[in-house]
Every structure is written in structure tokens, then in C-alpha cells.
Image (tube, rainbow, N blue to C red; front, side):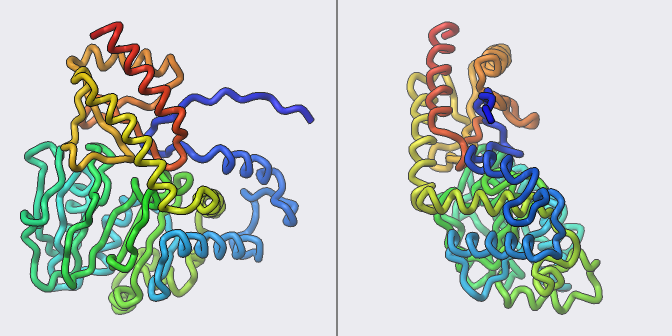
Length: 368
């Protein structure tokens, strides 16, 4: 049967974001009938052997990619990172204890707001007064001795900053929102007490949230079973292998395919090399003449979300209009900060970065 060529623009959206083309093609093939199952992947029961196999393989590949130690549980949950803003303190913050939060971006600020509804929060450091243009330094942290945990956001999607080295929290568990840089580079899971990430940026489609939690911290959830709503208790999900209720089955399946794709690319070290090359090209163009202005401190620049501005808002509107017409979609910055944002996650093709750099040079020549 003949296939029809499909025109695809370069998708710079921050999430839901670009997926690897081979993954989309495999999904397309399986959409009508999953091999050996003879029904759509959208239709299979989450209690079936077929789905249990899909879930188990996705977890195995996540463990392989991240080098996840045996004493950590991998949970497949719903509700996005925003639900984790509440679940983390609900499960890990005991009465009388304090949780430290590093206020390094808009999503970190939202996490703090939700945690304060649950218990006592200490904002260990904040760069809000600087519009989150840089990350707090280790020397600025005012950590609570014996804190329940320290929460950080490793990559700030809106402001375009990313930790190159995570904060040192000593013996206090580190909780990390990795939603927009998870598996874009090697990650030391053992440094963390808990890691969470919405899948819709680097790992898969919207609807799935990955939580990786150390087993000793799960004991806090066990102790809270009687007090917490069942669906908000990590221990319940761990005991039921993420199958307490119907999970986002299609999102789990698609994320499993993305994990397989990353492994085929050579794993996280290979992924990091590609991402560094892509980011390097784009930042070099931003810095080339000063016509474009990067908004994040150079030492904190994100390889996932590249934020920049032009001289006037009128020029920025023109840039967005013309770039969209040129097949460069999703470059408008977050409504909270304006400007431009190029999200160049794992699956974003390098030739798309080259196309944007070429467009930026042409735009500068015409309007500079």
C-alpha cells in the first residue's frame, strides 16, 4: 500500500513536546492492532498479560537508562508534576518537621505554595527578585538541620536555567523535579531520595508521571496510609505495581517506546553529547553579535529550554510570526515572561536547530 508523505514542522514547544519519529511510526503501526494481541494498544486491558509486559519492559528500560538501584521503586502515576507538588509533602513531610525548598523558578515557586498547605516549609534560597535569571549558589542555601527533605527543580522550563551540579544536601534526602530534563543526560539516582517528572517533555506523551523513590522514604507513606487519600499514597502504588487503578496505559506504552529509542541512540551519555551540541549551536548564534539576548545567566543556561529576547516586543512579535510561517513552530516564550523559547529536548532533531540558526541570521540581516 502506498504511503502519503506527511509534512511536519519543527516543533519547539515546551510540552507536550516533540516525540521521536520512529516512535510515532511504531505507534501508528500498533494503533489498529498490537502485534500478537490483535486489538489496538488503546483498547487493551491494564490487567492483561500484554499490558503487564509493556509496563514491566518500560520499567526495566528506565532502570537500565538511569542505573536505578534495586532499593528504589519506579512508579507510573497520573496528575503531572503539579500533583507531585502536593504528594511529596503529603507523603514525606511529617508533623513537626520542616521541608527545605530552593526557589529557583516559576514551577519551584508553585511547588512551595502547595507544600505550605501541607506543612512547614523553609525557603532555603530564592532568586525570584532577579526574575529567576540565575540559580541559587550552594553558599546561599540556608538549609534546616534534620529537614524532612530538600526540594529542587533541576531545569526551569520557563526561565531557561538548568543545574549543572545539583545542590549538596548532606544526609537530607534530595527531592528533584526533573520534568524537563529527565534522561537528557546521565543522572545519579542514588544521590536522590525521590525524583519525579511529567513525561510530556523528554520521555513520552502527556498523561504519565514517573516517580522514582527510595524504599526507606516509602516507609513514611506506609505510616500515613490511614490519613492520606488512597490515590495520593506512594506506598499504595508501590504495593500494587502502579496498577491500583487504571493507569494511563497508552502513555505508558509510548513512554516505553521512547525509552527503547534512547537506548538505541546509545543511552544517556550519547544523548547528552547530542544535546550539548544542539544547545551549543543555538547559544553561539544568540551570542554572536548581541542582536539576540539570552535571558539566563551563562553559567546556568539550560540545554533543554533556550530563552532569548530581541530589542523590542514588536520585533519579537514579528520574529514569532515569520518563524511560524517558516515552519519553526512553538517559539513564543511562556506568557509569564515573554520573549522566545526554543525547547530542544532529546527528540528534537539537530537539523531543526540548524534551521532556526539560519532563520535567526536571515532575520537579523533583514531587521538589524
